Length: 241
Image (tube, rainbow, N blue to C red; front, side, top):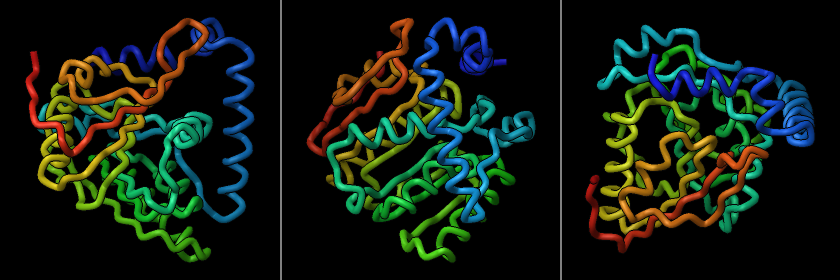
C-alpha cells in the first residue's frame, strides 16, 4: 500500500476526522453532503463513494500507483469553486480520477463551458458517463466527455483551464501529470487553475516554482484542506530537484 493510500485511510477514520477537523467542520461537511446528494438523487444522479478495483486498476497503470478513488465532499468542491475568480461559463474542466463524476455533475449543473473526466477504472468511468448523460437528458447543456485511461497517457484537451485533483495516484504519476500540465500551458498559451483537495503531494507542485498559490485553507490541525494553484502560459522553465 502506497503512502498516499495510507494517509487517506487514516483520514477516513471517524476519530481522526473529529480530532483534526473539529465538530463545526464536520457538521458543515455533512450538511453539504446530505443536501447535494438529495438534489442529485431527485434528478436520478447517484455518485458512488469509491472504486473497489484498485488491484486491477494498478495492473493497468504505468506506474502501478493508483489510489482508491474516494469521492470528494461537496463542501470542498464548492469551496474551491467559490474561491476561483473565473465565471462558471468560462470554465473548461478536466478531472483526473473522476470516479463516478461528482465534480463533472456540479460543472454541468453550474453551466461550465465543458467538463471532461478521466479514470483508469472502467466501472467508474461508465458511472460518470451515465450520470452526465442523465443530466444532459434533464436539460443541462454543458458538453461532457469521459474516458477510461491512465493519466500519464491521456492528453489534456484543448481549451482546458481548470484541473481538479483529489490524490487519485502516487508521486510518480503525479510528477508526469505536472509535467503534462506545464507542457500544455506552454503549447496552448493557456492559463490553468488547479483545485487540489487534501493536497498530500503539493510539494511536487511547489518544487517547480511555476505554480502560484491563489487560495489555501486549513483544517483545525493546520493541515491544508484545499489549495488552488494557477500556472500562466508565459512560464518557461521547469526542473524537478
